[in-house]
Image (cartoon, rainbow, N blue to C red; front, top):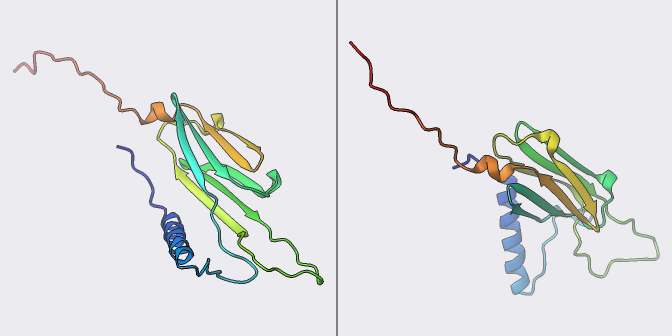
Length: 153
C-alpha cells in the first residue's frame, strides 16, 4: 500500500463541483466567487499502460508558456494560469461560465520513479505526462530469506 499525500485543495474542489451540480439541478446555475475571476481546477485522468503511468490534464485555451510541470520530493505538480478575455466597451457578457485564474494540481508519485525520465506533451488543450515504470514501482517487492541452521551456542 502506497502512502499518498492528502490534497486538501482537491477535496475542496470536489465539494465545489458537487455544489455546482446541486445548484445546476435546482436551476440556479453556478455561483461565481467574483465577477472577474472564478477559481478553477483542471480535470485530470490517470491511467496505467503496462508499467508506465500517464496523467492527462484538460487545459483548453492555454499556451505551453502558461503551463509548468515539475517534480519535487516525489510529488508531480502541474500549475499555470488561464487568463480571462478582456472585455471591449461595446461588448457585454450575457452568460459567463468559463473559469479563469491560477491553478495547481499535485500528485504523489510512487517511490523509485526517476524524475529525469518523465516527459510531457501538450496538444489540442490536453497535457499528457508520461511517468515511466511508475506502476512497476507500486508492485510489492518480496525478498526471500534463506533459512539457516540458526545460531550455534
